[in-house]
Length: 186
Image 1 (cartoon, rainbow, N blue to C red):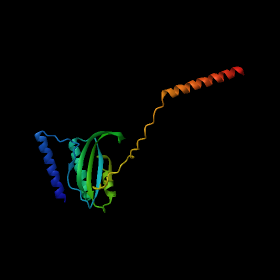
Image 2: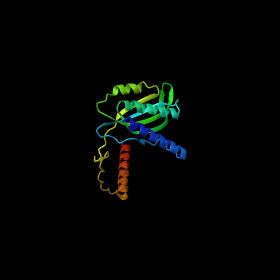
Image 3: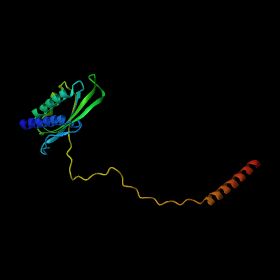
């Protein structure tokens, strides 16, 4: 299995070298599909941040080492993506910027994560990392509606004629005059 993985790494590096030689630079945010997902295994996603003190060549070596750590525990890398250099929300160990890398991998159910977490946690090059189980997406699942059905339109109300309002205003004026006259009496 490791021979297939290293062959894939060689092919990817040849593709990158050929693209550099021809002047066609691939965008760094474009991901690389490395293998097909095995439906019998769980699909995991590893997002990790590498300090910006490393160059891009060193970053590639760090990625290869992380891939080796995953391969040591029987993981098959399915997808990788370089998300770019970004500013961290808050400084971590006096580091303000970092390279974000995303790796999706298959792993058998019986593998324990404690040694894998331990090895990634104590890797000095990785500032932070997070491993999650990617949910399986059912292909034929109906799409849920997250909004209410539209309410039926209410029948429009007719506007009151302006003449009725004028009559009401005259009645009010007359009543006010009567009240004022009564107040004068008292």
